[in-house]
Length: 401
Image (cartoon, rainbow, N blue to C red; front, side, top):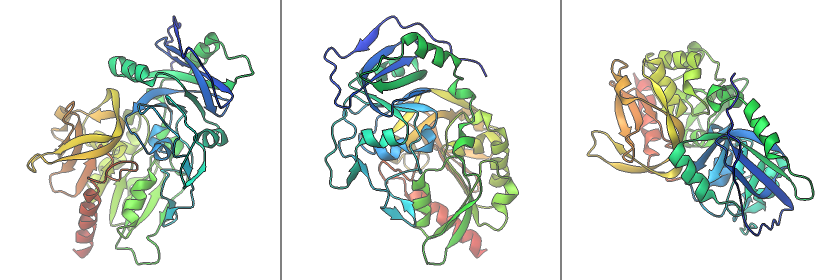
């Protein structure tokens, strides 16, 4: 694994009147040499990750717990985060928390402009206390607009974030540069294996009899996907990301290929499994990383987007259906090349009108459905939740044969 090339910082960006109500300070250093100093929150810790941004205005509990953010430092474009606090995990659907996308904070660090004190009837904790309890550092009172503009112009970059008590000496920029230099690139790490379950886990739709049973190749599933399937009466068994195709096919009505973090090109075994289930004749639903694995396994090619698609306001246009446009939730830094679909048996289904990214594919027989965006939202609009209805209809049709 190669280290990260780091440019020495030439200028430190800092608020002229830095007052921190958390009693903490923080430093953020990017590999391209940008250095930012601000107030700290969360845990006194130092973490390295790929620095990315999201345009979501709300839903930070869901974003922070989204496994697809593992290995990344998340920058929020909206100026205030934490104003409605942190909700209780006791609110659940079929035993799955409603306001969270996994059982822990997944990001390496959190970057926000301002950190107001929470004011909401459902809040049980502040954002500061929540991050502190889970060992995750954050930085606030920084110019996130400048950071986002830099990422949009130059692309995502590795960074190191250190939060520390204001009474202590800060880590030097040289120390942070050395930590970053020793860290491996985000593109070289198998993050999906880190967030995958170690053994199969079954989720049942309450006391009612399931309308169908599906197996999931879980490379970092968002809880929202489970909730959308369970509320439609589908029983889901999550298998580790290392599962074989026969495990996913034996005794199940269909297969789901989940979302997850990291570079899809590294997951060659998972891509082969995805191709096997896609050609099995059983209904398959693939989401985000799942779509990339499906396409790669069938012979397509992936590439890295300059700064990715992350937000809850992203339009996609459905192909061949009068150009219907829907607003969707995205969290992906890689995509599939349009021209590489030839010979895969897949046809384009959705495209992103802003930059032309391929956002969905399906098989010619209609048994395989795949989206690059997140139809379950969480957070975000439910414009595309009908895709789960379409998948369930495929499951029921298969059972009736």
